[in-house]
Length: 454
Ligand SMILES: CC(=O)N[C@H]1[C@@H](OP(=O)(O)OP(=O)(O)OC[C@H]2O[C@@H](n3ccc(=O)[nH]c3=O)[C@H](O)[C@@H]2O)O[C@H](CO)[C@@H](O)[C@@H]1O
Ligand SMILES: C=C(OP(=O)(O)O)C(=O)O
Figure 1 (cartoon, rainbow, N blue to C red):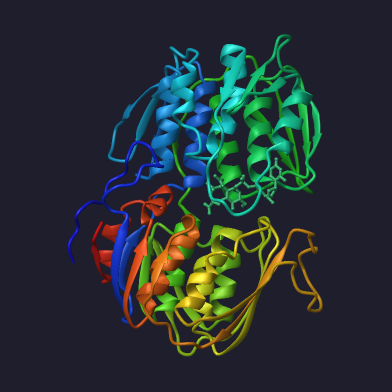
Figure 2 (spheres, rainbow, N blue to C red):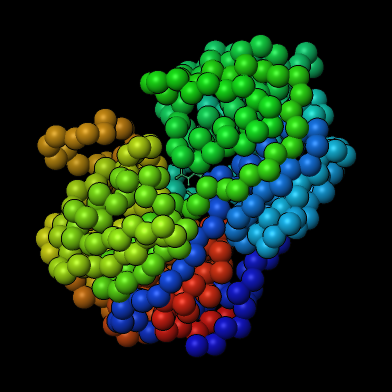
């Protein structure tokens, strides 16, 4: 195994060394990996630091390119960011927040989805905000209409620019009554980050309640916010005049944990995921059990292994506490090895099965139904945008030349290549660093046989 490069570029979009892997598959992955703070919390907690009048300390920050992008965008707005009291901790000092130059903001275009969450904090701190065009996984349209509608209700004025948007709040931001058309994670965070310093009370209905959102609420409460989570997806936020910095250890990355679990199932291996915890993964663990995998929940993590032949399963992705959409892509690799027909209904995004083309090229039997399947009783309400994938297994996979399309799809391609007999070339793996820290090191730790060839 030759490691030529396993570092993050400051800019998540840049290519270069570490982009192409030659993988020799066909043997079980066994070993231990550690997961740190969740990409889907850490990046938002970093934005929350903008709202404080004093510095914040965030611990268990993963070394991923989405964090680098958010750090850089904070820095161009005058936030001083440096390592704090232990490896993987950041001190974020927002006392000198200032407007950034347009070119500095534009340099972050297309790199991540997080910049949209700068709207409320920048409006509070500076009275205006410029937000670059967003990046993130291309798994559907991913509109930001819920975000902008909510911001307008708070009193913001939104202008479309040739690249990005400009917001201003000439008369300040006031609490609002907001009902989200769908429990969007990002829009819920947008409302939280805006309402905490708005004048008066905000009532948010049909809010997302993912564990990462609860952790963001914990961060905001440490800062001085007053947020009440009521039953039935209602969140009340009483605006306050001043927030301070926080000290916080981020919730673990349950998406990374589920990914390594699926790798153990797919390759008939055994992987201990240090830092994984049961409560946030209940729904995933139920599916592991249903497909015939086993898990052993320990004090410091969860051990995943395949117990025998894998069984087929039907899964509907959903908002929390349902089966998370980010889990379905790695799981599908394992389902190619299950005995019988599995069905995955993707109800969150309208285009999240593109990665299966590569799996089919490797020998998998997967048929994607772009308008979903009418197949009997369902727990998750049908959505017009949904699709379904029918996976028949087990099928031997053979090595192929494949190109990574997005973060989870990319991880799934690597795992498929490690499951497949023979040699695969996997291109564009740099995308995987958006959400998986020390990815090559971790592959090595579980015994993957690969070379970085470009
Ligand atoms: C950085 C981050 O935390 N990303 C996560 C976040 O993405 P993100 O916050 O972008 O996902 P959302 O929950 O907002 O999206 C859910 C659905 O709502 C739609 N929608 C959303 C906003 C909007 O203004 N209009 C609109 O129509 C989306 O197109 C999608 O169909 O939650 C997703 C759902 O758990 C996860 O897959 C992503 O990993
Ligand atoms: C869809 C994802 O991320 P993002 O929202 O950052 O594109 C993901 O983490 O799988």
